[in-house]
Image (tube, rainbow, N blue to C red; front, side, top):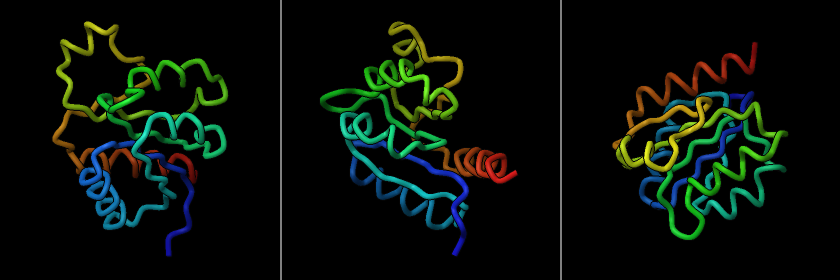
Length: 130
């Protein structure tokens, strides 16, 4: 069993996609403790107590979407060090039209490049343990 050194919150409203994330993280066997959520509202409610070092989120979700959630997170200084990866099928032009993403956010287009994501999560976990 790998001892977790980093907390990760994965937010994805598509249950099949969420299960794919779970399978990938299990195969990688990285030193991370993952929380899986399908609602931005739930994530905002629990994120202060979860204190993830990494948030992986979609932008297009029913109810409160990822855009609204990211705006609310920006207003929480206690989460300023949290790394964020947005994984979305939204076109870059549409993202720019909505004001773009914060420079601190990494953007990954769907379909998910799980090789890139694994390398990114591995590097972040190593920086947390060092």
